[in-house]
View 1: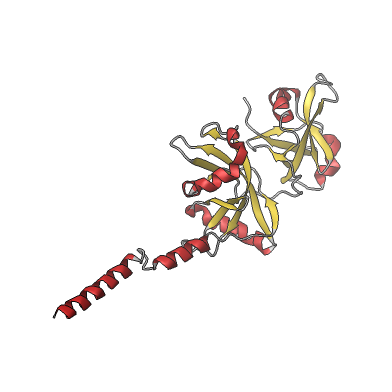
View 2: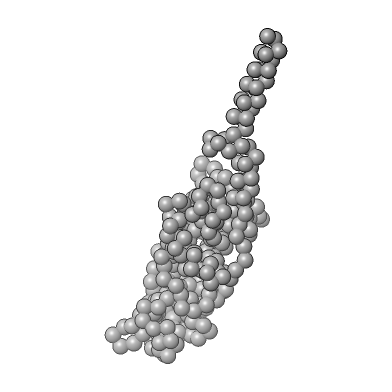
Length: 280
């Protein structure tokens, strides 16, 4: 009788231990650990495709990647601003890729910086991103966007991805320099001398423009400082003296830099607008 009770007790303990080693999904602890290791696998390789700096999306899950975010910030921690100082904080290049091997969500879209996972695209946004990323992958490419890093008021980090998968593609190659935020369209003067260049891209085209300092070539404000724009190495115009008062110092401090530019067909000629940050 005593022997029978001992056998029953042993069987009970083994069963209880087996239950404790399983998670809510019925997986063993080892299976769960294997899943988590698989979720750390990040797709690599490919040609980077720079996304336009339009739109804002809050990266999900930075709380779980606090250590990784601290690592990628490195010695630039002093550049990270509190949430609310939106245009002054540290910005880093982030890769955005599909993660079909993710055991929690096969539609997951992961955000990485320097090869470390810093968060994910929110689940309610992944369908839109999947539609954007799949064609890129088929061409051997992946998305790169600016990620702004902030300190949250209650501790930890807030990551804002400056990208919108529905934004139209640019018709020229990213120049490989710093990018200014795209908030306002600012008209360009002097584009009448660059009609041949603008016509190559056509009406309702978006292109990357590089910026530099210079002077206004004619008129009432001749020789006044201004900002000149170039497309693919060719000068295409400059901003007015009034706009230069807002942007000259701001742009000069950030050179070399680029911005998004919009080409449209006006009543008599192609016109050009620069997308620049909001400045009061």
